[in-house]
Length: 424
Image (cartoon, rainbow, N blue to C red; front, side):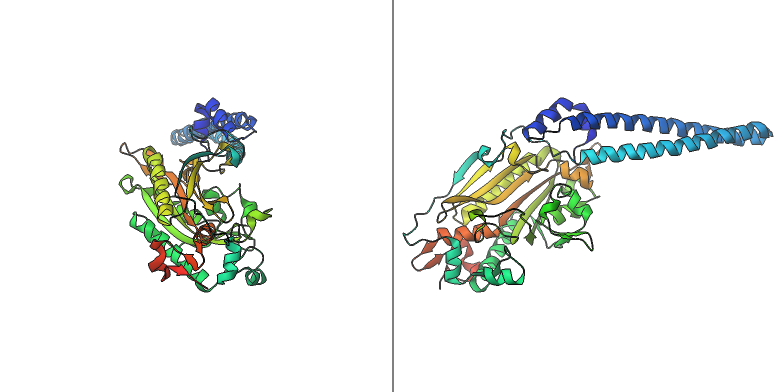
């Protein structure tokens, strides 16, 4: 959530950066500044009134000690009137503060200065590409055909058990999922990340803290009886571990990694892009999260990008890194890089990771702070990245490595999978 003090001091800049994100209700900024002015005036009036009450209350004691009961009684009436006025002021102040809060949560995070202007994914900038696109045999098929051939995933039974978009992994398909998860976790732990296994449901406060509410409620599965939400990513519970905490400055950065199933309604998704593992409602993902000193957050961001790039290199997958334009970024992000891998059988790029710096947008909501060298309280910066999302990684591994004799797996997975290839 943006801070009203920053908006007040940098109004023109805030409007200019929000426009890059294609936020059109810029009049809301002026409205919030008016409410903020009202809040500050009400606070001043309330403080002044409270000071009068305190002074008069002391005077009552003095007057009573002197035996001046009439004067003391008059002061009591004055205090009573001021207390009534104070209650009315407090109600006005509460209403104004609520209106200010309700407006602030509607504002997306400000994009970083390097974010390009644009409205859709076509306006994203390619930062760099890596790896080599494979040349497939003439008999090559997309992963949904390979899945059937090698009996790796049962979509029909998954649909019977739950519904469309809930795949049932089996046999070597389940084993490959487990191998990828373990490899990704070991890779992250070796880089200094502490592993967590978080709850798969979160409450409203947790979903609000990372910005899923009030922006993405329609994309989450909601358990209405308990007001819980199934997590769309482990970023949500993991970042909230430190909600309402004060971290010691020398403990920064805090580096966390977690595996979890992820649940997304993906409302309105249809067509060729959702075929097979391209888009599902439940999928596995390994996440990395960092809480860092504000002065070091973009160094940490670059470090996380390099970390995931090297992970994709180890899987020998052709990839590209995109800097997202303002219109394609999430509500909470200040700067996002997307990783896409090339699906040779489908002949298109598939997103497998987003690495985002949220600056203090999330930490302001969650009140994750630290005391600096001057003993001043500051908000940390939060960052996260997919490391990695499994469905499309698995799809590309199957498609790009298919041969006449089976699916050849990259060397880093041989020990985890227990074999160098998948055969019928």
